[in-house]
Image (cartoon, rainbow, N blue to C red; front, side, top):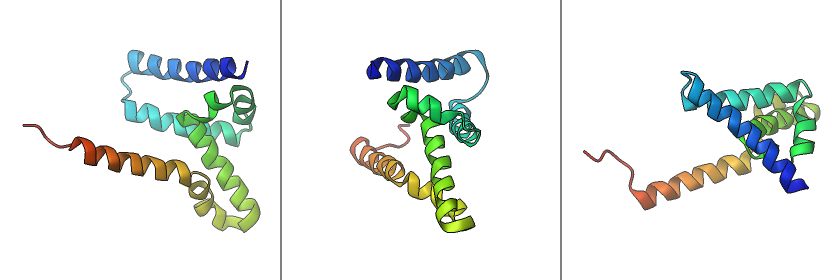
Length: 118
C-alpha cells in the first residue's frame, strides 16, 4: 500500500509539472524553482507534512520535498540556535542532497565531456 501511495503522490506532482510545461509558457527552470518555493510555502503553512506522511517518498523525493526539507531545517535550527538558524538550517538539513547533486554533476561532466559540438 505504501508503494501505491508514493506512486500516486509523486505521479500527481509530476503530472502537474507536465501540464505546466505543456499548457503554459513557463520554462522548466521556472517550474522547478516554483516547485521548491511551493514546498517551502506549503510547509510553512503546515500543509505539506500531512502530504509527506501520506505519500512517503512520493512527496519527499520531488522538488517540493526539497523545499519542505529546507523549511523544516530552518525551523529546527531557529528553535535550537536562534536567528542564526535562518542562514544555516536549510543547508544543514539538505547537505546530503546538495552534495550528491554536485558529485553526480562532476562525474557526468568527466564521463561525457560536455561542451559545444560545433
